[in-house]
Length: 254
Image (cartoon, rainbow, N blue to C red; front, side):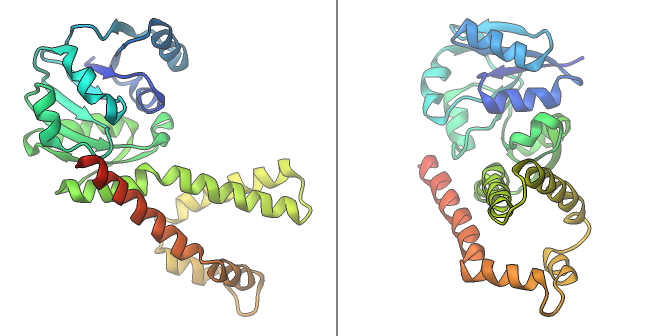
């Protein structure tokens, strides 16, 4: 079984590791022994743990999961040349990664938190020679899409990478709305969960506009609620969220 080396032990690293732990051996590298132990405990599976100081990445498949601002300090403590470096650092371009960390191939990946249940929508790009290897690896965490440019990856980061936060806001707001009208919170939460689960299946089969038209009868409840969403500029707000998140990704890359 192939070994995947995680540099970093935060939320995203844990989420990806959860999705990969049944198909790969996991080792994790970090600065704090207690946090490494927490990583192992959260995974519920034995992992090899190493401190970052002078860690040798020679011939390893490395998943870089540190904060973008920590790239410089982390890179200085790594020695050797990796077989493949997969980075989930938002906004950090391939060329900068190549200058900081030695690797035979570099691929940028942008998974999301659904990786923890094997349902991430991950976009990747980078060295085309390592495309297939990266696709196979990241499929362990869910669906994967190869993009042809880093600009496209940064846009996808604003959508799929940040998307769970947007959907969480919408889910919370819809639940609160039902509670406001008199539904018990426990019941409202259960209904919202079922709504999102079912919609996840529907959206893979039909265009969003067709789904909307199919449920909106003339003068009905959906039409009334939909008009309220348009009145409050929900569509424009969602589009602006993507624009602002993409702008931040570009800013981070400069």
